Length: 310
Length: 310
Image (tube, each protein chain N blue to C red):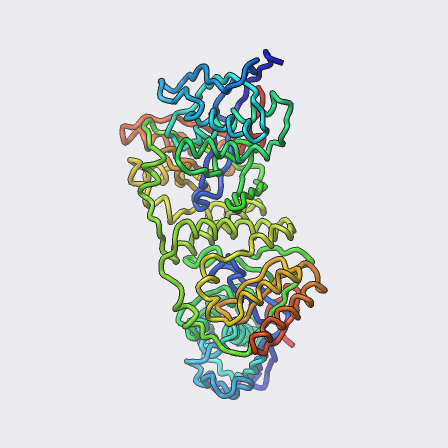
């Protein structure tokens, strides 16, 4: 058993999805992190290597999001199994793509597979969330849950934790544009107010209802009209130079809707065909270029698988 | 044409539906208002009689919710058609059952029928909303829309107005208990704060998403868990003596969920069978009785028709 090892792919995710602040997220096909796990003969969780982070992520498993998730998992199943973890960051840090979530999900999914699945996939969520807590101070689930399970996930409640997979229509494609600068989640959280106006809250939950109904009815128009955020986007947009130009470019090119991915600075747009999504992505990139900002484009359908062995 | 007349039934409605403050409502089979409209040879809207209001509602059509709705409708279609309106209030005022909405809906639906339907049913909504504005100062749609169209209605957006019918599962039954005292909508609005905590808003829109998904998936458990209101109910409950006893009685008797109907003081509970709904209603009534408060019970499936000719 000691030489047993696995390579895991954990996908990037788009959290919030405009109106669904802290309660909605979906997975995409790329980018994603690769995590290699290898069982050891001796106890202890070791992070042997992190590639692609420019040396910025901690190797200490008690501080690393993947390490924290694996440690929380092993504690729960009362195992002193040792494991070596190698993390290949295939997506930028502080990008709003759920980078820390992907590593946590990859780690905890991998160790559970190596130990022949003591827990079901969905039962791994709380441990991956502990990784998120280590990364940003709050155990939010809107990146972790879709990276784990794939698809569009609603977090109906945090206490107790309840996640609801939301069916999505077949022709929904995401254009994700990542501008070449970093926005720390903590900074992006800081601009939010602790209180919001009731009238804005009403607008927001009307759109949440509309988005869920639109997704379940395969009503693309309704999906588009519901992709509005009057709570986080107005406060975070100033942190992203050119945000409104990029958004307008996406909508003009035929996107159903466009907003900030997670806490930014990446911007996502949903479209009704792969072709439109490609055009939308190019126009968004062009708008960033006008601001002298380089960016990368990812085009993907909704990823319906989530984390997997590769 | 001058003697043409119609009798209309417009159903009572449950607005808010726990988590969906200002954006959700459904119609029930009873009670409801009856409106009799009769075309006149001469221009002018006249309210000839109001029965069942103890003389409290204004006969002046510019102040009466049904009159205002009919006047707004006639102005829109540029008609000077005269009409006499007789209103039979079959439900209490200030009860949280959408009394003013039902009269407005009955009036505007009736005149449109008498004039051979210049507008479609769903196009009547803005005029009925004007009636609501006259009654309570704000043209909200969460009573008017379900009274007009039947079923469960989501108001996705007010500006522009967009309503979304939400499918409901077959075995959903409402027990509605109306305690014998009045709560003015204005007073019930006054206790709400203009700002709410972001963390409460997140809980609320998580539940809105869960409720819509639960209704569309026919997942009764999810419907029940989502029927929570952390925004309006905690502030309005003190206005209803015995509220928590009544709610606990409903839940203990097997209700999926229970909260304030509209701005109260009526309390609704949803259950998964007619039998359970009946028991739930009785237990709720008994809890009010313990507070020396008389009440009336209405048991009904979701009304799928809305306003109609009788």
